[in-house]
Length: 486
Ligand SMILES: *Cc1c(COP(=O)(O)O)cnc(C)c1O
Image (cartoon, rainbow, N blue to C red):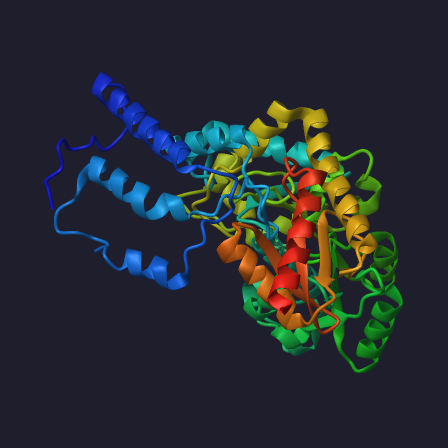
Protein backbone atom coordinates (compact mmCIF):
# COMPACT_ATOMS: atom_id res chain seq x y z
CA UNK A 1 0.00 0.00 0.00
CA UNK A 2 1.36 3.41 -0.93
CA UNK A 3 1.75 6.05 1.76
CA UNK A 4 -0.75 8.92 1.65
CA UNK A 5 0.56 11.81 -0.42
CA UNK A 6 -0.43 14.39 2.15
CA UNK A 7 -2.07 13.90 5.50
CA UNK A 8 -5.58 15.22 5.54
CA UNK A 9 -6.24 17.81 8.27
CA UNK A 10 -8.52 16.46 10.97
CA UNK A 11 -11.20 19.13 10.92
CA UNK A 12 -12.58 22.25 9.37
CA UNK A 13 -11.28 25.35 11.14
CA UNK A 14 -10.45 28.99 10.59
CA UNK A 15 -7.09 28.41 8.82
CA UNK A 16 -6.98 28.76 5.05
CA UNK A 17 -5.59 25.27 4.64
CA UNK A 18 -8.38 23.76 6.73
CA UNK A 19 -11.03 25.50 4.67
CA UNK A 20 -9.37 24.60 1.37
CA UNK A 21 -9.11 20.96 2.31
CA UNK A 22 -12.73 20.88 3.52
CA UNK A 23 -13.83 22.26 0.17
CA UNK A 24 -11.55 19.92 -1.76
CA UNK A 25 -12.76 16.77 -0.02
CA UNK A 26 -16.39 17.74 -0.50
CA UNK A 27 -15.97 18.94 -4.08
CA UNK A 28 -14.16 15.75 -5.05
CA UNK A 29 -16.89 13.71 -3.38
CA UNK A 30 -19.61 15.59 -5.23
CA UNK A 31 -17.74 15.04 -8.50
CA UNK A 32 -17.40 11.32 -7.81
CA UNK A 33 -21.10 11.03 -6.94
CA UNK A 34 -22.32 12.91 -10.00
CA UNK A 35 -19.95 11.01 -12.32
CA UNK A 36 -21.33 7.72 -10.98
CA UNK A 37 -24.86 8.58 -12.11
CA UNK A 38 -24.89 7.40 -15.71
CA UNK A 39 -28.48 6.48 -16.49
CA UNK A 40 -32.01 6.24 -15.12
CA UNK A 41 -31.46 2.75 -13.68
CA UNK A 42 -32.42 2.08 -10.06
CA UNK A 43 -29.82 -0.64 -9.51
CA UNK A 44 -27.05 -1.88 -11.73
CA UNK A 45 -27.91 -5.44 -10.80
CA UNK A 46 -24.90 -7.04 -9.04
CA UNK A 47 -25.69 -10.25 -7.16
CA UNK A 48 -25.20 -10.82 -3.43
CA UNK A 49 -22.12 -12.98 -4.12
CA UNK A 50 -20.53 -10.39 -6.40
CA UNK A 51 -20.89 -7.65 -3.79
CA UNK A 52 -19.53 -9.85 -0.98
CA UNK A 53 -16.64 -10.91 -3.19
CA UNK A 54 -15.66 -7.29 -3.90
CA UNK A 55 -15.80 -6.31 -0.26
CA UNK A 56 -13.80 -9.32 0.92
CA UNK A 57 -10.66 -7.76 -0.59
CA UNK A 58 -10.62 -5.02 2.04
CA UNK A 59 -9.20 -5.00 5.50
CA UNK A 60 -11.44 -2.73 7.53
CA UNK A 61 -8.58 -1.25 9.50
CA UNK A 62 -5.36 -1.39 7.46
CA UNK A 63 -2.03 -1.03 9.35
CA UNK A 64 -1.34 2.17 7.44
CA UNK A 65 -4.10 4.54 6.46
CA UNK A 66 -4.37 4.80 2.69
CA UNK A 67 -5.22 8.52 2.76
CA UNK A 68 -7.99 10.48 1.08
CA UNK A 69 -6.99 10.13 -2.58
CA UNK A 70 -6.73 6.33 -2.53
CA UNK A 71 -9.85 6.08 -0.42
CA UNK A 72 -11.89 8.13 -2.85
CA UNK A 73 -10.66 5.91 -5.69
CA UNK A 74 -11.79 2.81 -3.79
CA UNK A 75 -15.17 4.32 -3.05
CA UNK A 76 -15.58 5.23 -6.72
CA UNK A 77 -14.73 1.69 -7.82
CA UNK A 78 -16.35 -0.39 -5.13
CA UNK A 79 -19.19 1.45 -3.49
CA UNK A 80 -20.77 4.17 -5.61
CA UNK A 81 -21.69 2.05 -8.66
CA UNK A 82 -23.68 -0.33 -6.48
CA UNK A 83 -25.78 2.13 -4.53
CA UNK A 84 -29.46 2.01 -5.17
CA UNK A 85 -30.59 5.19 -6.95
CA UNK A 86 -33.55 6.27 -4.84
CA UNK A 87 -34.32 9.14 -7.24
CA UNK A 88 -34.74 6.78 -10.18
CA UNK A 89 -38.26 6.61 -11.65
CA UNK A 90 -37.62 2.85 -11.71
CA UNK A 91 -37.36 2.64 -7.93
CA UNK A 92 -40.63 2.05 -6.15
CA UNK A 93 -40.13 -0.95 -3.93
CA UNK A 94 -40.63 0.48 -0.47
CA UNK A 95 -41.67 3.51 1.53
CA UNK A 96 -38.18 4.76 0.85
CA UNK A 97 -37.94 8.11 -0.83
CA UNK A 98 -35.35 10.06 -2.77
CA UNK A 99 -33.93 13.06 -0.86
CA UNK A 100 -34.78 16.60 -1.98
CA UNK A 101 -31.72 18.58 -3.07
CA UNK A 102 -31.98 21.23 -0.38
CA UNK A 103 -32.23 18.51 2.26
CA UNK A 104 -28.88 17.10 1.14
CA UNK A 105 -27.49 20.56 1.85
CA UNK A 106 -29.10 20.31 5.31
CA UNK A 107 -27.35 16.98 5.85
CA UNK A 108 -24.03 18.59 5.01
CA UNK A 109 -24.65 21.32 7.56
CA UNK A 110 -25.82 18.78 10.14
CA UNK A 111 -22.73 16.59 9.65
CA UNK A 112 -20.28 19.48 9.50
CA UNK A 113 -21.41 21.07 12.74
CA UNK A 114 -22.37 17.76 14.36
CA UNK A 115 -24.68 19.24 16.97
CA UNK A 116 -26.23 16.91 19.53
CA UNK A 117 -29.84 17.48 20.51
CA UNK A 118 -29.65 16.20 24.09
CA UNK A 119 -28.76 19.50 25.75
CA UNK A 120 -28.95 23.14 24.74
CA UNK A 121 -25.22 23.69 25.21
CA UNK A 122 -24.55 21.03 22.55
CA UNK A 123 -26.97 22.49 20.00
CA UNK A 124 -28.07 26.07 20.76
CA UNK A 125 -29.72 27.12 17.48
CA UNK A 126 -30.50 23.51 16.51
CA UNK A 127 -32.47 23.06 19.75
CA UNK A 128 -34.45 26.23 19.06
CA UNK A 129 -35.06 25.09 15.46
CA UNK A 130 -36.49 21.80 16.75
CA UNK A 131 -38.65 23.59 19.33
CA UNK A 132 -40.04 25.92 16.64
CA UNK A 133 -40.54 23.15 14.08
CA UNK A 134 -42.32 20.90 16.59
CA UNK A 135 -44.68 23.72 17.65
CA UNK A 136 -45.70 24.38 14.07
CA UNK A 137 -46.04 20.68 13.30
CA UNK A 138 -48.41 20.32 16.25
CA UNK A 139 -50.48 23.15 14.73
CA UNK A 140 -50.36 21.50 11.30
CA UNK A 141 -51.97 18.35 12.71
CA UNK A 142 -54.55 20.33 14.68
CA UNK A 143 -53.10 20.03 18.18
CA UNK A 144 -53.51 22.85 20.72
CA UNK A 145 -51.36 24.59 23.33
CA UNK A 146 -50.88 21.56 25.57
CA UNK A 147 -49.17 19.60 22.81
CA UNK A 148 -45.51 18.91 22.21
CA UNK A 149 -43.28 16.63 20.21
CA UNK A 150 -39.75 15.44 19.59
CA UNK A 151 -37.78 14.19 16.61
CA UNK A 152 -37.03 10.46 16.38
CA UNK A 153 -35.14 8.06 14.17
CA UNK A 154 -38.42 7.27 12.39
CA UNK A 155 -41.75 5.54 12.72
CA UNK A 156 -40.58 2.57 14.76
CA UNK A 157 -39.07 4.74 17.47
CA UNK A 158 -42.07 7.09 17.40
CA UNK A 159 -44.40 4.13 17.87
CA UNK A 160 -42.30 2.69 20.69
CA UNK A 161 -42.33 6.10 22.41
CA UNK A 162 -46.12 6.39 22.06
CA UNK A 163 -46.84 2.88 23.31
CA UNK A 164 -44.55 3.46 26.29
CA UNK A 165 -46.54 6.58 27.16
CA UNK A 166 -49.81 4.71 26.70
CA UNK A 167 -48.70 1.85 28.95
CA UNK A 168 -47.43 4.12 31.70
CA UNK A 169 -50.48 6.40 31.53
CA UNK A 170 -52.84 3.42 31.81
CA UNK A 171 -50.95 1.81 34.69
CA UNK A 172 -50.76 5.09 36.57
CA UNK A 173 -54.33 6.32 35.97
CA UNK A 174 -56.22 3.02 36.06
CA UNK A 175 -54.06 0.70 38.17
CA UNK A 176 -52.50 3.34 40.40
CA UNK A 177 -49.11 1.89 39.57
CA UNK A 178 -45.92 3.82 38.67
CA UNK A 179 -44.13 1.76 36.00
CA UNK A 180 -41.25 4.21 35.78
CA UNK A 181 -40.36 3.62 39.40
CA UNK A 182 -41.55 0.11 40.16
CA UNK A 183 -41.46 -1.68 36.82
CA UNK A 184 -44.39 -3.62 35.44
CA UNK A 185 -47.48 -4.18 37.63
CA UNK A 186 -48.39 -7.72 38.72
CA UNK A 187 -51.19 -7.76 36.12
CA UNK A 188 -48.81 -6.81 33.27
CA UNK A 189 -49.62 -9.94 31.29
CA UNK A 190 -53.24 -8.80 31.01
CA UNK A 191 -52.48 -5.55 29.17
CA UNK A 192 -53.80 -5.54 25.59
CA UNK A 193 -53.09 -3.26 22.65
CA UNK A 194 -55.35 -3.30 19.55
CA UNK A 195 -54.18 -2.63 16.04
CA UNK A 196 -55.23 -3.87 12.64
CA UNK A 197 -53.95 -7.10 11.16
CA UNK A 198 -52.13 -5.09 8.47
CA UNK A 199 -50.40 -2.71 10.91
CA UNK A 200 -46.63 -2.27 11.08
CA UNK A 201 -44.52 -4.86 12.91
CA UNK A 202 -43.18 -2.19 15.27
CA UNK A 203 -46.32 -2.87 17.35
CA UNK A 204 -45.10 -6.38 18.22
CA UNK A 205 -41.53 -5.18 18.61
CA UNK A 206 -42.63 -2.45 21.00
CA UNK A 207 -44.81 -4.85 22.98
CA UNK A 208 -41.85 -7.18 23.39
CA UNK A 209 -39.44 -4.41 24.41
CA UNK A 210 -41.98 -3.02 26.86
CA UNK A 211 -42.22 -6.35 28.67
CA UNK A 212 -45.72 -7.15 27.40
CA UNK A 213 -44.86 -9.66 24.70
CA UNK A 214 -46.37 -10.29 21.26
CA UNK A 215 -49.47 -11.83 22.86
CA UNK A 216 -50.41 -8.38 24.15
CA UNK A 217 -50.96 -7.23 20.57
CA UNK A 218 -54.47 -8.04 19.39
CA UNK A 219 -54.79 -7.96 15.61
CA UNK A 220 -58.15 -6.58 14.56
CA UNK A 221 -59.51 -7.84 11.22
CA UNK A 222 -59.83 -5.34 8.38
CA UNK A 223 -62.64 -4.51 5.96
CA UNK A 224 -62.50 -4.74 2.14
CA UNK A 225 -60.39 -1.60 1.99
CA UNK A 226 -57.85 -2.96 4.51
CA UNK A 227 -59.04 -0.58 7.24
CA UNK A 228 -59.55 -1.67 10.84
CA UNK A 229 -63.05 -3.07 11.29
CA UNK A 230 -64.33 -0.98 14.19
CA UNK A 231 -67.20 -3.38 14.99
CA UNK A 232 -64.64 -6.18 15.36
CA UNK A 233 -62.52 -3.88 17.54
CA UNK A 234 -65.46 -3.31 19.88
CA UNK A 235 -66.20 -7.02 20.02
CA UNK A 236 -62.61 -7.95 20.82
CA UNK A 237 -62.33 -5.34 23.57
CA UNK A 238 -65.62 -6.51 25.10
CA UNK A 239 -64.67 -10.18 25.14
CA UNK A 240 -61.17 -9.41 26.43
CA UNK A 241 -62.64 -7.38 29.29
CA UNK A 242 -64.97 -10.22 30.12
CA UNK A 243 -61.95 -12.53 30.24
CA UNK A 244 -60.42 -10.18 32.82
CA UNK A 245 -57.87 -8.61 30.45
CA UNK A 246 -56.88 -4.93 30.43
CA UNK A 247 -57.34 -3.12 27.08
CA UNK A 248 -55.13 -0.01 27.31
CA UNK A 249 -54.43 1.27 23.82
CA UNK A 250 -55.53 1.30 20.19
CA UNK A 251 -53.07 2.08 17.42
CA UNK A 252 -54.80 3.31 14.27
CA UNK A 253 -52.72 3.00 11.12
CA UNK A 254 -52.97 6.12 9.00
CA UNK A 255 -51.59 4.66 5.82
CA UNK A 256 -50.68 1.00 6.10
CA UNK A 257 -47.22 0.10 4.87
CA UNK A 258 -48.49 -2.12 2.06
CA UNK A 259 -51.78 -0.64 0.94
CA UNK A 260 -51.77 2.93 2.24
CA UNK A 261 -55.17 2.17 3.77
CA UNK A 262 -56.36 4.56 6.46
CA UNK A 263 -58.13 3.52 9.68
CA UNK A 264 -61.04 5.76 10.69
CA UNK A 265 -59.93 7.70 13.73
CA UNK A 266 -63.32 9.29 14.48
CA UNK A 267 -65.02 5.93 15.07
CA UNK A 268 -61.98 4.54 16.92
CA UNK A 269 -61.82 7.64 19.16
CA UNK A 270 -65.40 6.97 20.25
CA UNK A 271 -64.45 3.42 21.27
CA UNK A 272 -61.37 4.65 23.15
CA UNK A 273 -63.41 7.28 25.01
CA UNK A 274 -66.02 4.72 26.04
CA UNK A 275 -63.37 2.26 27.17
CA UNK A 276 -60.89 4.72 28.73
CA UNK A 277 -58.11 3.82 26.30
CA UNK A 278 -55.18 5.68 24.74
CA UNK A 279 -55.36 6.27 20.97
CA UNK A 280 -52.16 6.49 18.95
CA UNK A 281 -52.07 7.27 15.21
CA UNK A 282 -49.29 5.57 13.32
CA UNK A 283 -49.19 8.05 10.44
CA UNK A 284 -45.63 7.17 9.40
CA UNK A 285 -46.84 6.90 5.83
CA UNK A 286 -50.03 8.99 5.69
CA UNK A 287 -48.73 12.03 7.58
CA UNK A 288 -47.54 13.58 4.30
CA UNK A 289 -51.09 13.85 3.04
CA UNK A 290 -51.69 16.65 5.56
CA UNK A 291 -49.85 18.92 3.10
CA UNK A 292 -52.46 18.35 0.41
CA UNK A 293 -55.59 20.51 0.71
CA UNK A 294 -57.23 18.28 -1.91
CA UNK A 295 -56.63 14.93 -0.24
CA UNK A 296 -56.01 15.60 3.47
CA UNK A 297 -59.60 14.85 4.45
CA UNK A 298 -58.82 11.20 3.67
CA UNK A 299 -56.73 11.11 6.87
CA UNK A 300 -59.64 11.99 9.15
CA UNK A 301 -59.10 14.30 12.13
CA UNK A 302 -55.74 13.21 13.55
CA UNK A 303 -56.03 15.75 16.36
CA UNK A 304 -58.50 13.33 17.99
CA UNK A 305 -55.57 11.00 18.70
CA UNK A 306 -53.45 11.21 21.85
CA UNK A 307 -50.26 10.94 19.84
CA UNK A 308 -49.19 10.90 16.19
CA UNK A 309 -46.22 9.28 14.45
CA UNK A 310 -44.95 11.46 11.59
CA UNK A 311 -42.23 10.22 9.26
CA UNK A 312 -40.37 12.73 7.12
CA UNK A 313 -38.28 10.16 5.27
CA UNK A 314 -41.35 8.86 3.43
CA UNK A 315 -43.85 11.20 1.70
CA UNK A 316 -41.92 14.34 2.72
CA UNK A 317 -38.84 13.22 0.73
CA UNK A 318 -36.26 14.01 3.42
CA UNK A 319 -33.07 11.98 3.98
CA UNK A 320 -33.03 9.10 6.46
CA UNK A 321 -33.43 9.37 9.28
CA UNK A 322 -36.13 11.91 10.08
CA UNK A 323 -39.27 11.31 12.10
CA UNK A 324 -41.22 12.78 14.98
CA UNK A 325 -43.68 11.83 17.69
CA UNK A 326 -46.30 14.45 18.46
CA UNK A 327 -48.29 14.26 21.70
CA UNK A 328 -51.55 16.02 22.43
CA UNK A 329 -50.84 16.41 26.13
CA UNK A 330 -47.16 17.13 26.77
CA UNK A 331 -47.36 15.67 30.31
CA UNK A 332 -46.96 12.24 28.71
CA UNK A 333 -43.34 13.08 27.90
CA UNK A 334 -42.50 12.88 31.63
CA UNK A 335 -42.15 9.13 30.96
CA UNK A 336 -38.75 9.89 29.40
CA UNK A 337 -37.57 12.60 31.78
CA UNK A 338 -34.61 12.03 34.06
CA UNK A 339 -32.12 14.61 35.28
CA UNK A 340 -28.35 14.14 35.32
CA UNK A 341 -25.94 16.57 36.94
CA UNK A 342 -23.56 16.21 34.00
CA UNK A 343 -26.13 16.88 31.28
CA UNK A 344 -29.55 18.37 31.85
CA UNK A 345 -29.72 20.00 35.24
CA UNK A 346 -33.17 21.06 36.45
CA UNK A 347 -31.83 24.57 37.04
CA UNK A 348 -31.13 24.89 33.26
CA UNK A 349 -34.83 24.77 32.53
CA UNK A 350 -35.59 27.33 35.20
CA UNK A 351 -33.14 29.61 33.43
CA UNK A 352 -34.83 29.07 30.05
CA UNK A 353 -32.48 26.52 28.47
CA UNK A 354 -34.32 23.65 26.81
CA UNK A 355 -32.66 20.24 27.09
CA UNK A 356 -34.55 18.08 24.61
CA UNK A 357 -33.18 14.82 26.04
CA UNK A 358 -36.09 14.94 28.51
CA UNK A 359 -38.51 13.89 25.77
CA UNK A 360 -36.44 11.36 23.89
CA UNK A 361 -35.49 7.68 23.99
CA UNK A 362 -32.14 8.74 22.58
CA UNK A 363 -29.42 10.75 24.29
CA UNK A 364 -26.98 11.84 21.57
CA UNK A 365 -29.27 12.74 18.69
CA UNK A 366 -28.94 14.29 15.22
CA UNK A 367 -30.24 17.76 14.37
CA UNK A 368 -32.81 16.31 11.94
CA UNK A 369 -35.39 19.06 12.49
CA UNK A 370 -33.19 21.35 10.39
CA UNK A 371 -34.08 19.25 7.35
CA UNK A 372 -37.77 19.94 7.87
CA UNK A 373 -37.13 23.62 8.57
CA UNK A 374 -35.11 24.07 5.38
CA UNK A 375 -37.23 21.93 3.03
CA UNK A 376 -40.55 23.41 4.22
CA UNK A 377 -39.34 26.92 3.56
CA UNK A 378 -37.66 26.04 0.29
CA UNK A 379 -40.72 24.27 -1.19
CA UNK A 380 -43.53 26.00 0.67
CA UNK A 381 -47.15 24.86 0.85
CA UNK A 382 -47.52 25.03 -2.91
CA UNK A 383 -44.37 23.01 -3.57
CA UNK A 384 -45.28 20.22 -1.17
CA UNK A 385 -48.88 20.17 -2.32
CA UNK A 386 -47.65 19.48 -5.84
CA UNK A 387 -45.30 16.71 -4.67
CA UNK A 388 -47.98 14.92 -2.66
CA UNK A 389 -50.80 15.38 -5.19
CA UNK A 390 -48.66 14.11 -8.06
CA UNK A 391 -47.94 10.88 -6.17
CA UNK A 392 -51.60 10.36 -5.24
CA UNK A 393 -52.73 11.05 -8.80
CA UNK A 394 -50.11 8.70 -10.24
CA UNK A 395 -51.40 5.94 -7.96
CA UNK A 396 -54.98 6.57 -9.08
CA UNK A 397 -53.90 6.48 -12.72
CA UNK A 398 -51.91 3.28 -12.27
CA UNK A 399 -54.75 1.53 -10.43
CA UNK A 400 -57.20 2.42 -13.21
CA UNK A 401 -54.79 1.24 -15.91
CA UNK A 402 -54.24 -2.08 -14.12
CA UNK A 403 -57.97 -2.61 -13.63
CA UNK A 404 -58.52 -2.06 -17.34
CA UNK A 405 -55.74 -4.49 -18.34
CA UNK A 406 -56.70 -8.13 -18.89
CA UNK A 407 -53.38 -9.48 -17.48
CA UNK A 408 -53.59 -7.84 -14.04
CA UNK A 409 -55.73 -7.67 -10.92
CA UNK A 410 -55.67 -5.00 -8.24
CA UNK A 411 -55.73 -5.78 -4.48
CA UNK A 412 -57.58 -2.62 -3.40
CA UNK A 413 -58.14 0.91 -4.69
CA UNK A 414 -55.32 3.09 -3.37
CA UNK A 415 -56.05 5.84 -0.81
CA UNK A 416 -52.42 6.98 -0.72
CA UNK A 417 -49.66 6.29 -3.22
CA UNK A 418 -49.12 2.51 -3.04
CA UNK A 419 -50.60 0.23 -5.66
CA UNK A 420 -50.74 -3.50 -4.89
CA UNK A 421 -51.52 -5.73 -7.88
CA UNK A 422 -50.62 -9.03 -9.46
CA UNK A 423 -50.23 -10.62 -12.83
CA UNK A 424 -53.02 -13.17 -13.22
CA UNK A 425 -50.41 -15.96 -13.49
CA UNK A 426 -49.12 -17.97 -10.51
CA UNK A 427 -47.52 -16.54 -7.35
CA UNK A 428 -44.27 -18.06 -8.60
CA UNK A 429 -44.52 -16.07 -11.83
CA UNK A 430 -45.08 -12.82 -9.92
CA UNK A 431 -42.00 -13.51 -7.77
CA UNK A 432 -39.92 -14.18 -10.88
CA UNK A 433 -41.11 -10.98 -12.50
CA UNK A 434 -39.82 -8.97 -9.53
CA UNK A 435 -36.38 -10.65 -9.55
CA UNK A 436 -36.10 -10.32 -13.31
CA UNK A 437 -36.80 -6.59 -13.07
CA UNK A 438 -34.24 -6.19 -10.24
CA UNK A 439 -31.33 -8.04 -11.83
CA UNK A 440 -31.89 -7.46 -15.55
CA UNK A 441 -33.94 -4.31 -16.05
CA UNK A 442 -32.72 -1.90 -13.34
CA UNK A 443 -36.28 -1.69 -12.05
CA UNK A 444 -36.93 -2.23 -8.34
CA UNK A 445 -40.52 -2.88 -7.26
CA UNK A 446 -42.11 -4.33 -4.12
CA UNK A 447 -43.67 -7.68 -3.33
CA UNK A 448 -46.16 -8.68 -0.66
CA UNK A 449 -48.85 -11.20 0.16
CA UNK A 450 -52.57 -10.39 -0.10
CA UNK A 451 -55.21 -13.03 0.56
CA UNK A 452 -52.54 -15.79 0.47
CA UNK A 453 -51.25 -14.86 -2.99
CA UNK A 454 -48.07 -13.07 -4.03
CA UNK A 455 -48.70 -9.52 -5.16
CA UNK A 456 -46.43 -6.88 -6.65
CA UNK A 457 -46.31 -3.33 -5.39
CA UNK A 458 -45.48 0.11 -6.73
CA UNK A 459 -44.81 2.57 -3.92
CA UNK A 460 -45.05 5.95 -5.60
CA UNK A 461 -43.18 8.55 -3.54
CA UNK A 462 -41.28 10.13 -6.41
CA UNK A 463 -43.09 13.03 -8.09
CA UNK A 464 -40.88 12.86 -11.19
CA UNK A 465 -42.50 9.55 -12.16
CA UNK A 466 -44.84 10.21 -15.08
CA UNK A 467 -48.00 8.45 -16.21
CA UNK A 468 -46.29 7.54 -19.49
CA UNK A 469 -43.51 5.84 -17.54
CA UNK A 470 -46.02 3.88 -15.49
CA UNK A 471 -47.74 2.72 -18.68
CA UNK A 472 -44.39 1.58 -20.07
CA UNK A 473 -43.67 -0.37 -16.89
CA UNK A 474 -47.02 -2.16 -17.06
CA UNK A 475 -46.25 -3.10 -20.67
CA UNK A 476 -42.76 -4.30 -19.67
CA UNK A 477 -44.17 -6.49 -16.88
CA UNK A 478 -46.74 -7.96 -19.24
CA UNK A 479 -44.04 -8.77 -21.81
CA UNK A 480 -41.80 -10.31 -19.16
CA UNK A 481 -44.67 -12.42 -17.88
CA UNK A 482 -45.27 -13.77 -21.38
CA UNK A 483 -41.58 -14.54 -21.85
CA UNK A 484 -41.27 -16.24 -18.45
CA UNK A 485 -44.35 -18.37 -19.10
CA UNK A 486 -43.00 -19.73 -22.38
C1 LIG B 1 -42.48 2.87 7.72
C2 LIG B 1 -43.49 2.60 8.74
C3 LIG B 1 -43.12 2.48 10.08
C4 LIG B 1 -41.69 2.42 10.52
O1 LIG B 1 -41.04 3.61 10.32
P1 LIG B 1 -39.43 3.67 10.27
O2 LIG B 1 -39.23 5.10 9.97
O3 LIG B 1 -39.04 2.75 9.17
O4 LIG B 1 -38.94 3.23 11.60
C5 LIG B 1 -44.13 2.36 11.02
N1 LIG B 1 -45.42 2.32 10.65
C6 LIG B 1 -45.80 2.41 9.35
C7 LIG B 1 -47.25 2.37 9.02
C8 LIG B 1 -44.84 2.54 8.36
O5 LIG B 1 -45.22 2.58 7.08
